[in-house]
Image: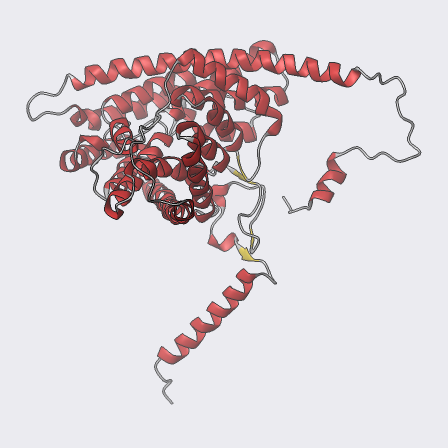
Length: 487
């Protein structure tokens, strides 16, 4: 896709009318409103049905997860811990997915994004039960994954099947599946507005599916009401009196940079681990068993708080009561990477919440700042950066925090989103624009295919001047330090 200005896009997408064209005089004053009314009713019904189905599916998943987790913890006896079963659970999860639904592999949302971009949202209905069972198996025995990926994939599979039942067009199917993504996110985290926005924002870097906004909101609200999950609203007891608005702005920017770099590290670790394990793709069960052994050893050394969802740590961090080491976020990055890349099934957003909130809490505690406030900032900022969803993350910050704090959380999230660059935990995201006016990025392709060699500095910009200056300085330094040439 070539980069076109707005005028060129409008000239292609809009019908061309000239003064000589004959207008349809039969167009009545009420025709436009009738068409809008019909469309609104249609998508309100489809969105509500999608939300109802996804909410019920999410509730079933959470109920199964609670039951399985409870019974898995009953295995604790003396020196034996439930997570010692991971070397068996992960290979079983791999077998389940490879046998019945290969597209259910990984953290779920990735496969849904691919389906929306390449198959008009067509997803095999068998993905839903397989993804549910695989994720329950992974999480119950301590795999470090999230719960939103399965809900998004289950929601997308249900809405895709519903589109088949109604014989909807490919365009309508695609919209309905996007509604399923947003509804799954809204239901599992109890944040209907930001969940709906996540569903329409996560598909692209820099583009939003506005035609799906209305039905996605309907689906998100309905799914939230049906599922009944309460949002993780933190209790903010800290005194902010000594932090003026100017100081809060500066801290939001600074922490945003830190959270953006952290998301970049997370993405880099995931990509490099995936690349390193490709040489062992003919031995998936051995890789899964080894991953289970490594996870069990890490939990034994660093503690069980890194196993499973880690919601206890997230809640304590956001309530300002957690006592965490600075390295807690790094341990969670490693355990999540091992789980997902060796065969575990589950989402990635809950680990992102853990990473952001634990890092924010630890940094704030060391700097003498309000712990819960900056844990909440990290909660939304790492999500914004790692998934390229700054609007959804900003709205989530406003949904979860008191209004004044939500504004600063949004600033922190948008800063992190810019700092991470053209990267994402979802490699199938499509690039819609460049995050910097000084960079030229190939538009329209998968973000996972973009590397440093694909980026170009745009001539005449400040970035070009800096690049030329730094290149000249580097060459001068090399000439100074290089040994003299012999005769």
